[in-house]
Amino acid sequence: LAFAAIQAISAEHSKQLKNAEEKYAKSLLKAEGKSAALQQQLQDQKSSNFSILQSSQRIIANSKDLKAKVEELEQALQAEKSSKTPILQLSRKIMDRCKELEVKKAEAADEIAALKEDLFNMNMDLEEAKDELEDYKQQQQQQQQECQQE
Image (cartoon, rainbow, N blue to C red; front, side, top):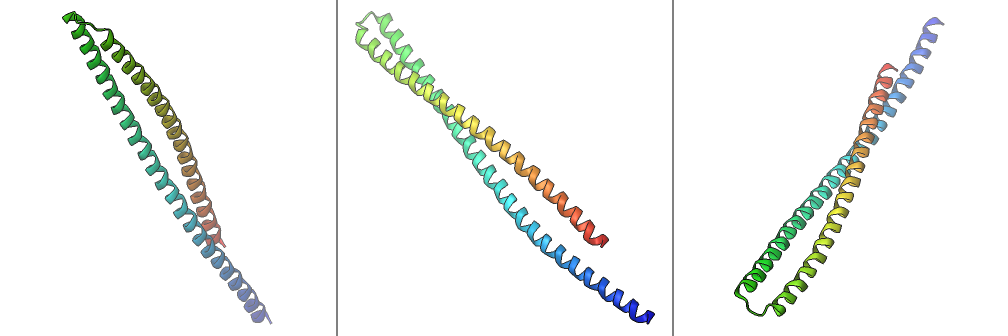
């Protein structure tokens, strides 16, 4: 009778152990899927950040080009003034060009500010994703320890 009771307890324990192992396996598969998704999100975020960085660099380069053109126009104006030729027409052209360049400069500044804000937001999203991944890993380790203890 005692042997039968021991067998029944052993069978129940084996059943519980098997259930715990199945739960652990399912949990592990789910964790791997979520981890892969978070890794992909992290990679996408990095690509997006790189793209924003490249755009910012192009805008900065364009701003330098615009500045060089303004300086060139100012030098041309100075040369005209020193040669004492009629400069009214040239001056108007230069002023018009300067106005165009100022508009472009303002647009570039706005675009840089928007890109910086996007980059900041993406970095915040990236940090949140990292925190979620770390929390999830800790949760999985805790579940694994609980399963091993069972």
